[in-house]
Image 1: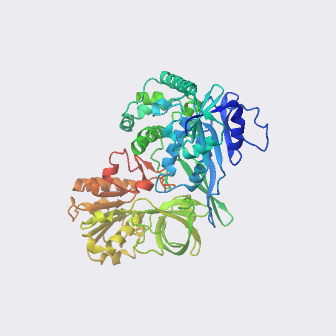
Image 2: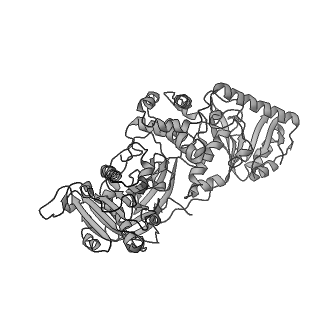
Image 3: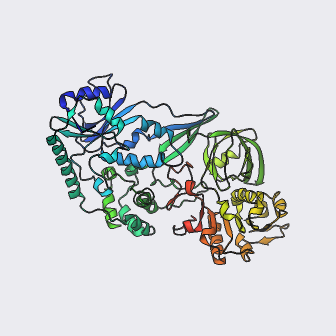
Length: 344
Length: 271
């Protein structure tokens, strides 16, 4: 299907049709931050106060929260727990950096020998409409990790529709087969040359802004440079000096995939819970006997950079970073990945 | 594939006290767990947690799994209170097996320390089950004291097996001990096999692994032929959770057995 134009007047109708059989989440502007919010058709008017924030940067919450939930019961004894059948969902207004993050998680949870059926169920039952990011902020650096502020055909593995805000409405570009069906539900007309040109101009403005904010690409041999500095504690300590070990960067990170399984006694057996974990936590790598290869914080700080920008790129041919800038935004010490990698 | 986090049940059908703080648990899982020597199992102590252990029984025996476990932490401490007839949980097998096809026709030099003999026993039993495929099997094992030796009741039988050569040492002897005294490397001054062609397999405390590896390299073993059981925090067993990262490896997926060539560039791999 070609790129379609959906006039403002028909948008509510389309959203209504999308949310008829699925729970729809949209980015809402609350104070000065974007947060995912659930559109609840049962309580019309509930969300009227929260303006849709399609033209802003990504939501504060990492998109992984929808699929790899912060806390989840995953096993029990006696008995056997199977993943519950997930409901259908639409994420309306994710960003291209969210798509990159989901790609990292797909590689971790669905493309290894063992597949996470909890993740798969949620992911396969969620359709994603990716809105352009027309005004990247100074914290954004998707252009340094091979990303763009908008989705293209290359993103069809994780995105279903690319949405661009243009004068008088939205341009909708189906990316996946499911996206074709979504767009088919809308009362659209083929996009005009002028509308396509406007979309392109807006996208190039955003890309230019990113290039101005982040003019220098990371060195192509960054993975090797990081590995070479594995024992350069002085370098990593200097950059870690302002870290207060709050783990906020790792909790806000949409690509961080680490989790902890812990059991608690229940009746005559146990209940197993899976929670997000962070490699900055002191006990993260500690073994049962008490030895800890990363007892010092500087080793844990290094591990984060090694994982995201050395090991993952070497292994999976992409950094485990979407350039979303959440880590910098939440950091109390204002530690900037860009600065560290520029000096590595 | 179902829920990868859900264990199956296994009944403890027997326990054997190996030493004051090491016990062998013989388990009968509700369904077969087709592990191969070198792979590990995630054992659930219901209500107390889950921890990885490499089976110590032969992988040719499918209906039961034996695990020889040292009491070191919260979960293993709780496990020692479990009795015959109690139920535990099992997930797995996980990790990479020993590449036995690469061992064929070669002498195998096995070095174990303390409870590290447990996973090596699974390998030893796999090798001796098809002994004609391999060269000679040398087992060098060290423990702190004679009382700390695991499988005391099995070693005399093993010594009688064809093509098997066993030597033992203890750090501290008692009045009955007639063999060598010293750390396990004291058994390695003379290595009676062709080092350049032989396979070495090592498992034990990290410090012991470090010095045994140095000794093996000094003796002429090739780094690609030295197989080491790396100790990391293997948590999920699936290569998903990140805890067991050792340099570029997830030891739960790529290991836990890695060759010296794989780990030699990692700073302090034996922490």
